[in-house]
Image 1 (tube, rainbow, N blue to C red):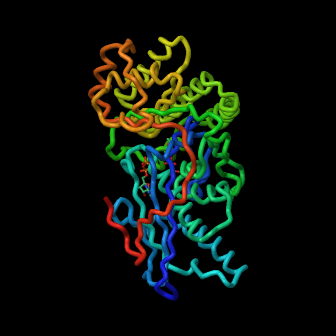
Image 2 (image 1 turned 60 degrees about the vertical axis):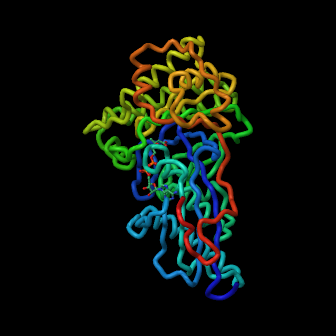
Image 3 (image 1 turned 120 degrees about the vertical axis):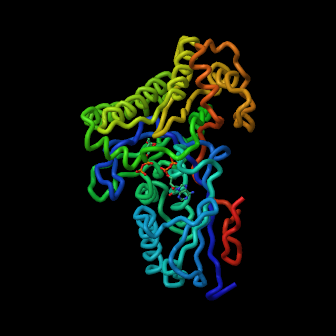
Length: 397
Ligand code: ADP
Ligand code: DP6
């Protein structure tokens, strides 16, 4: 195919990441520059992923478009998406200016099609996987030579936490100090192969859209919480060092303690905001209780909870403690969906969790599904396209 009918396509999948040191606060809202560094684990794409195809062609009429899960998204009025597209186009333009033989893809309309294999905007980090996939797919379409670190600067402008989904394993987002954000980027702390035994169990408490968005919530915190200042200036910088050391030394107990402390510190500054912000509910607290009970029973920290801007619990544990940690939840919630698949099938129910009755009943009534997963790799280029050879979006399943 040649000339105006040629369809250029590139597809990628990108992972979700769940932070153990939370990003909560911006020093620049336009560029998504954070008040503190953060650190996350990239979760396996066998369980959760965004799949995006970026395509462009002279035959596409403007403007640029995005179809997400079969529905047209309004990207024209999304400053964040526009910032990503502008940055990527300008990198492509530079390549085209250097090498005149390259097709002028930067001038063509983009048609983006994406699908998440899990609920969107329900506190399961779809925006992180989504913006990472969008940036990676367009960077591949444009054949950009930039590294994942450099691309993370662009994904950050889509959604802060998205910068950490451009890499696998254990990833830090360095807050940086520059006003233009050129040093506010993600960096791999350790690859998946360093600690592949790390597992995550997600208890989906609510698959509804969340109340206060992260963007709005963190702004309220920055403007009104007095506790937040100590978190930004002292607590997080100290914890970042400690948890990176714990990861390098594969010291799970220290990792678990800091993970739980930092989740609690984040929810404490939410409660300290005005008006106060509540993300956790009774089901979340029952999950905390179950984790604390499992740890007490083991006589050491074998699992750690963390909660984002919603009630869902994410529980980190090591494969060797599958029975003592995840097994307790499987015995309490045997019939809800999500225990199938590679990670879930190896969990044997543990009837001896000794969780008190009230938390047990609350979990039974409030958890709708689980996601069994583990630490995983970064975005993957794939040949399964969501735009066909004629440039038409493949219908959403
Ligand atoms: P979540 O808790 O799932 O991250 P948010 O409300 O923070 O929820 O973000 C949801 C928004 O992220 C969506 O409305 C959409 O704009 C964007 N998003 C989610 N998935 C994708 C995707 N695959 N591609 C592009 N953008 C996405
Ligand atoms: C609680 O990255 O969704 O999940 O930059 O405004 O898009 P924006 O916010 P977002 O916030 C994530 C907050 C968090 C903590 C974290 O992932 O570090």
